[in-house]
Length: 360
Image 1 (tube, rainbow, N blue to C red):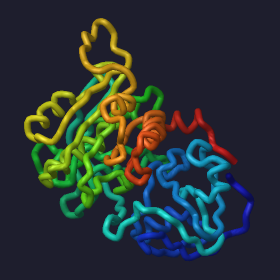
Image 2 (image 1 turned 45 degrees about the horizontal axis):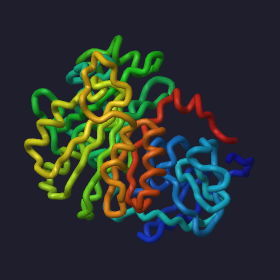
Image 3 (image 1 turned 120 degrees about the vertical axis):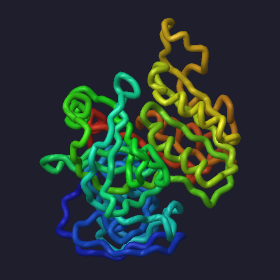
């Protein structure tokens, strides 16, 4: 909720139980200050829409900027919950966020990238491969995302679909990123990608961003939940699990409306032969007779509960449309999943923001 306020000076922020601390600058959001200080606070959209950055305020005063009520309700705010992406401290603040660790933050960089390859994976999904400058290392965790810096200050966020050790460029050179871009008709960026972009174009990116990455200090079995192009960061997690030789049981549930939405189904099935601990459950919600679909049907997040009614011993990584991520979070916590074992990357589109609006 936005309130009128005088200019807020910088304040001291402490995050428990990690003990990490940093100082805000005048009128700077808590999340922006944490990123600047290298403190790995959880976050997703950075725009008050997804709720990934929500954490408990133990002490202090904050004022929220515009945000969506589904990300933080008035009742939650009254109970002391804050969205760090749009909360400005008005005193020293003590937060509780168990996702914050001592080693996870990586430097945020702006750099040019060159389009090295483009490939349609389905009628409305483009694989975009970017080559980064060889002279400037770009470090990121599998599952994080980058932002394209467009004209007039416009930004668009897309998850990196390859793990850091996996070259995405056709020539196999390191320092390449793979992105999966779904065409949103009328979208400023995706219309350009599908109609005008060509190989060797130069794009400016900034990153890495996001707290959707593998927690490798756990031995719990993993559920990977992907809806549509939410598969992009999940693909990077699978590559990371294979690269590290993980023996944790992993089950991928990938959902789409039609079979064509599972645009890298063959890639996943090839991984099954290479990774004995990986299981794959594709789910289609709106199959037509001409699809000849013989697999699971319905909502992908519910397929998880059909197979695993007790999630108390699991970690879940969920990525895709907000309605899928939000529904999964609510259902899985009711099924015993500890709230701090649910990691999410909700794909908030500009259309989502315009439709849902913001609280004032």
